[in-house]
Amino acid sequence: MTKVHVRKKDTVMVISGKDKGKTGEVLAVMPKVSKVLVSGINIVSKHQKPNKQNMEGGIIRKEAPIYSSKVMLYCEKCKSVTRISHKILEDGTKVRVCKKCGETL
Image (cartoon, rainbow, N blue to C red; front, side, top):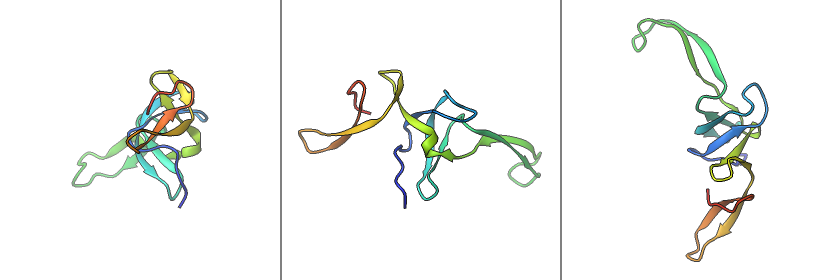
């Protein structure tokens, strides 16, 4: 299984592709295929037949997964993308820290 550098509920920014520069929250992480699902990013149109849940059917717009290598963690304090480092606190817990400003993520 491959390791993904972001977690669920992280704020990320897309660094390449059609949605470059957009930010969103990670909804799901799929480490087996190295993909993430981000809210408001990579919107696709899906044609759906009518069924019991959706009586009308029609064209539905929803998010599709993108490769995790196309996103970077977004620091709210710096207002920019950043890499992360790890820091061990006095009580022994390990936290993720912004490389640019030192803020915990």
